[in-house]
Image (cartoon, rainbow, N blue to C red; front, side):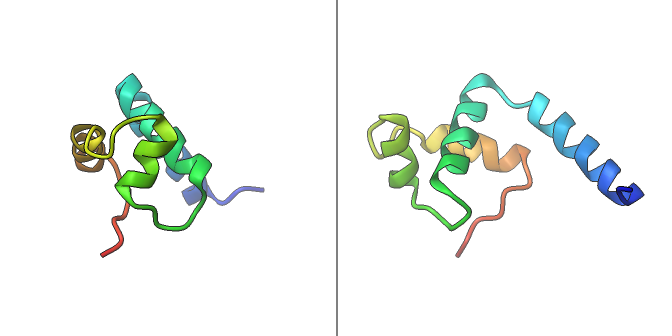
Length: 72
């Protein structure tokens, strides 16, 4: 049986995901496809078929609205 706090986490992240713009969802999908390790913005841009500086606004917006941790 799932722990009750796990249920709340799933609901919280589902709500956050549903509030993302289509571009942010596309960006998130690219991050997931690259795997669990930290990735450079350029790697994500390449995965999306964009120029290296193109996803900057999406990344900024996405990070402000989500719980993604940024590796220093």
